[in-house]
Image 1 (cartoon, rainbow, N blue to C red):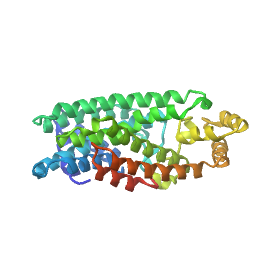
Image 2: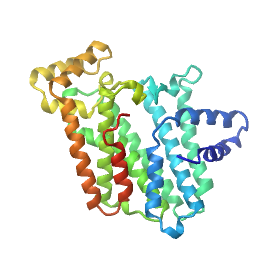
Image 3: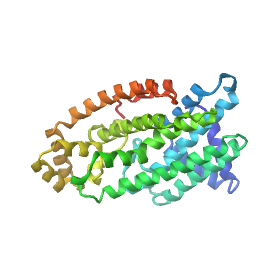
Image 4: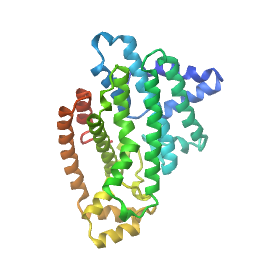
Length: 330
């Protein structure tokens, strides 16, 4: 994503009013550490959706820059959410380096940094977007997005204290829609459309297919957490140790016999490496790698077909994103 230096200077200006030297430099450090290294898919979705939908006579350099800035705002918001997520999950690494809260001079000050990032976004948007008719809609969309994410985080956390044998696919999908799908795919698409003067993706058919794309993305993450190379993904796997409700464990429950389920219950959610190895062997015994490959191929084709049949979504953007993330390694 281009224009980051310009965006960084503008967002620093929001807080430099409070302390030109200390706060501005601190925010720059936080942003450079936490935002860099990501795939920037959310920002790219905002821009791609905007470009595909906005009338050609409105696609000026100034308006395009606003779309880029809005995309960067979503990336900063995403990074702020990941700070909280890493703290709650007790994660060690993110994007190939120690999590922000794991730095010796940061630790739990990261909570305040996350809040500062979010608050700065709103001040930035007010300063640069409040002249637009869609300003209030943008703010409302972001506020709704925060609520949905916190609901998803709650559902994700309480599952870690649940009997693993009671996990269901319905529960998994509900959690993922709130925790991942809404703010990874639906919200950036909606923001791009709002800025372009359209809100077609609020229709149920459009919303549902965007959610399916988000679920597809999370199922890939679940698979990579277990089977991906940490040197490539940039994150040390913790889903099994944390006792997460993932696509892998739910699909395992659908395939396992009584004995295998008893072994799962004994070792799932344990922190020691031996327990993790036992769980991964169970996954191999029921053929989860093959089950995932079948799902990925089937879902990819199904979503691509649905995109063509669904009105109210930027079809070119959606197809391009699916092609990009299909069979991804990180």
